Image 1 (spheres, rainbow, N blue to C red):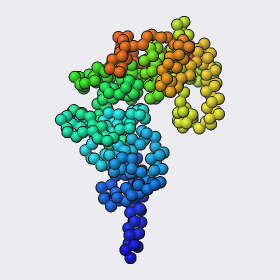
Image 2 (cartoon, rainbow, N blue to C red):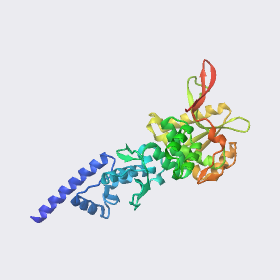
Image 3 (cartoon, rainbow, N blue to C red):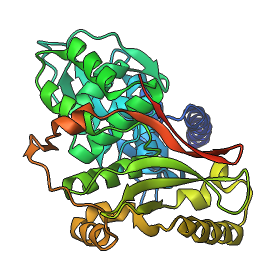
Image 4 (cartoon, helix red, strand yellow):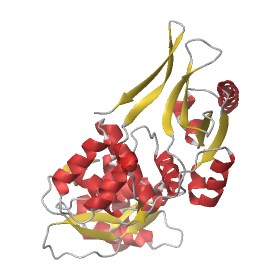
Length: 372
């Protein structure tokens, strides 16, 4: 009968949709289909009162359970891949390219998708898609989609993002390329001389550090700079004063007015949840190790200040805390185009990859590794 044929067709469509959703999920994407019958069936399922399928952007779909489980960066990656399937010629740029290239980006910067257009192109921004005019560039493939080249992506982010977000990108660029600030500045000047925003990008480079191990560290350091406190050394290695052969790394290190060290530690969930950092230890074991480590570090006659990423959003609290622990105040820098203006001393300082102290044949040896 007609009703039976309709039920059979509906069942076949549901099976097809489930298979297509599984394929999209396996590819880290959302579902886009040019099949109008399947598209209409998806729209009907997404329009239900308590839908099992959602339509996060026009014409792309996901299981509601998957979409709700993804953080904003993963949502953006899935959406970018779906849009790439829908528009084969698109090249993603700015923070969308940075996300696909593996740069740290903050959640609030990925709400829109950034797409390159050639000079003179007439396609305009619409909805969640923001268009940027990009000149000559050789796109690369990252995360399964076409994105602007590494240095083009770095330049676009440094030229446009707010300082703390741009600093994340600059730190990461130094770290993955293994180059100095001077080399990064030279690359940007050579490739983008005369481009709008090149001066701002170079100012951001002056504050960058390859030792920053996370976006949170970069954002906190940006707030420290803006509040006018001295730059810390990052990820300094020190020997355990009790157990021979064991070493500690300290996130941030300053010296107070009398030359005594101030150790800064950045708190975050990662050290308690990342399998690479927990190494199979329970939460109690991790906390015991943290307490033991902090107690031993105080044997360096150092003060120990715990900082958090959220203090970057509360700059007055951050400033009071740093001042209370004796972190040197050097004066808030002038700000130009949203970026602190670096002094000549800041611009010309060496680019330390890592530094610290080792014990060799019972002798303490200080070391530094400087990027070329």
